[in-house]
Length: 458
Image (cartoon, rainbow, N blue to C red):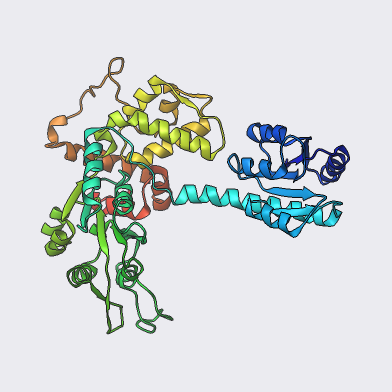
């Protein structure tokens, strides 16, 4: 229920306002002085304040000024000695509106409704800005993460191009965002392009734009991502999936700082810093003829490798605690405790989906568990095919399994990943979208994995 605080030293005014507002189904709290009103603002969730200007102990303007330091709650000032100067002063100090006594009923109700709507919009805007514009911290104290933070601090202020490598869900995009945030281009836009999510026949139009009539569906001119990122940063995610023809044009843009729209003839100057990321081994892709060596050397002035979660399990307690606090705040519930045994169980999971998978699992545990997240919860609600390997009281030796057939750790990871994806696809009747959502990766990435492992439906 919406709560309105009335601060006025005249009892008849307070009683009248209470009757009117309660009839409109607002909850009303009233006090006769500003000091008590400020105390209530500190302790209670107040949606709107109606405050008299001339009062004992503390003037209404002083209450308004002090309240600005405590809350964003909208104020409507009331006075029986209203002047234009008083109204202007109220507005300057942050009041939503000014009403004169005796109060007009209709104007009062309209002003209250509008002030509440504005207050609600202000709060929603702040939440959305905090959610979508704030770059999250790179969490972790492991050696690999510390090296990444140090590299970002050194490289970000320069104009050097950066190639970020790492598995899906490991946090490559976050590294790119921090490279932009700490660069001299931070006041200009960061434009992101997922090269794996755009069909090969459209990637050139997406990057460089097109002129009206350049192809069948080009009904109007389109500005490409290079132009949108002018003076800023262009983040080319999953660049290993870009077509060879698009690679050639990107190479030219990087060499000459010029682009030409599809179907156009005019060259356009662009000033863009390019940061690229991929989950593929580009050197192997070059050998296979899928990636240009000259483009690789243009992009890889600085190389940053983001370790997978399984390579930094010491960071899991901090990550799990932070994700728990974030998710609980989103659901507006009390933060749940993750027990030490639950943390050990989390550290023992294989984490094929890396940070993204951990975040999804924490959200699942918060929804399905009780006040504490226990080891039992982790075992029950983690991926049912995930094998938990614990030290001490659980056997880590799988009898009859031939480990010698794997020459490297990467070979074993590929084997396990292939089996896991095949199981999930079969379980979901080869519904790729559903499987991608379930295991926490993008659909385009799942298609890449299917091609990589040569998986086929039985």
